[in-house]
Length: 333
Ligand SMILES: Cc1cc2nc3c(=O)[nH]c(=O)nc-3n(C[C@H](O)[C@H](O)[C@H](O)COP(=O)(O)OP(=O)(O)OC[C@H]3O[C@@H](n4cnc5c(N)ncnc54)[C@H](O)[C@@H]3O)c2cc1C
Image (cartoon, rainbow, N blue to C red):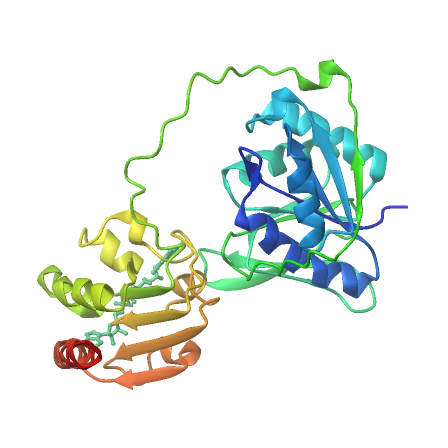
């Protein structure tokens, strides 16, 4: 019988990526609801320490495949190893990250295993009574939230966006089991040859890691007014986020975009300035700890998710807010 909840951990040069801990945190809830163990799959080379870390962060079992050919992500050996492992262990549910790695691996795997896959989920849960995985994601151009089930095929597979939940905490006293899988060399063959790695030049904006995001929408009126947003972001030591409307107008480049077709952020403070709060925008910022919204329309959707709403004109509020923050800075020395 198919049993257990799995996550596919991600690592870079032997160091686990934050998203691995986010997956553990999400999947722990599912495993507990089902009363089944939570396992992590770790593929890499010389990653034993990372396997232990996964246990500290909530995995009951870690399936470890260690091979020089797994040093960097390569779809061929990664998929072959996972397929073999899944056939051997028969998990009930597999959750991976909607990263380049997860988005490459999971569709190939789902096709090979003849099962379904729901990509880019914003929520996962277990259905009372049936124990089925409820996979929720925006659908029909992001205008509705659809909850999808995989009733008759196994495993049930889903990807979730990075930063859409908090990472699981580390407990160095947790214990678990690392199961090392030794596979024959033919499983590690690849059609690809890695020629080199180059950092993406346009990715200089790191809004995903920022503790404060000052986000701007079309309500800012004109690109010249972005000076207030820049000043505010600097005063709050934050990064600048943008709605798609602002990016489409060419006022800010795409790496700033928050939302369904942009980035997902979960800062401590999300300050939304002149953003209406369309469902596609909310999909990228819902995990923020504190949301403050400024909008002149009291019926704007953004107020439904805001902890603090300021109804008013940005042209008046932003200069005054900047002034106030500057005076606080002076007072604090
Ligand atoms: C498939 C798909 C994917 C999408 N992906 C994304 C995405 O990733 N991210 C995203 O953001 N959107 C996305 N969208 C677009 C989304 O539906 C909205 O169109 C967009 O978020 C609107 O941006 P906005 O809030 O800046 O603009 P608007 O909706 O035009 O809102 C502007 C707001 O500013 C307020 N305002 C105007 N003037 C002032 C003022 N002087 N002072 C204070 N407030 C003022 C208005 O009251 C209004 O609420 C997507 C749409 C589709 C169909």
